[in-house]
Image (cartoon, rainbow, N blue to C red; front, side, top):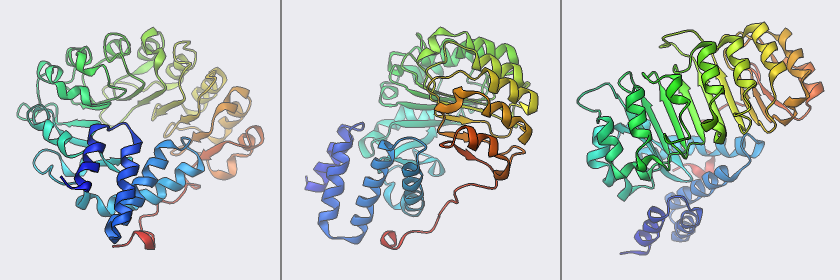
Length: 362
């Protein structure tokens, strides 16, 4: 085994440890090969990004530096996974391939090869409605490979309450910290059991077209087992089967004493509009929330006074108001009340830089 192979094996053996990754980067720098130097810089920048204060200017800068490098070199750095993963669903974390998209049946059968090649910690399971590509709940729950993941994405109508419960109560799912459910058959009743026997280690939860209206929001808000959540994203999209949360649903979440530990909350496309936004702003009582996303809620500029009037919003670092009828020139009340707050609007975003820096060019 070469030094390069041994150092890479150390990365695979400890996927949550930054030290082997940085040691591998040092080795790459020492080779004197330009391509290795580019990869080494990318590893260090992504490790720094993971360590940076979330949503800070430093994190934004590192993201802008690393995104074009990942886009340009992804195919070259993702090796040995053809036929197992879906190419467009790959993402790097801390300098190495960390998240992939694949069929659950292929994951159960051949997933061990993925972990032999890359320090993967997250999987999006594709086309869960497909009988050919989808594993049954029992098959996925029984796979010891599930224990190697901290991020799981399940979608499709076949992923109903029973499916989610079987997978979530598997002993192999105890380490899942981040879960996304999208356009599936699971309901708010099952979501309310997360963090207990079902996905007991859960810390981040993203829901697309799962929680609907005031009653569902209240079911989530009343769940004691969700008290350990640090991030909650409740999104309403084009495949929605029922109504959005609207103002009463958003207020129910804001009034929940069990969700006080959140540092990130996103309510996307929930039709808050003026009255709902004002009611939500008045009910806002999270002591440590850092990021609040309210994209696409029909919020007018006239509702911003309600946000400025609640001193509880002083904990926020970022308020995302993109997709609303709010422009940068409308932010006076918020800027006066919270000078430190970064507010995102459609006309005042940081541009995405896709061009490589000179030092990262081949």
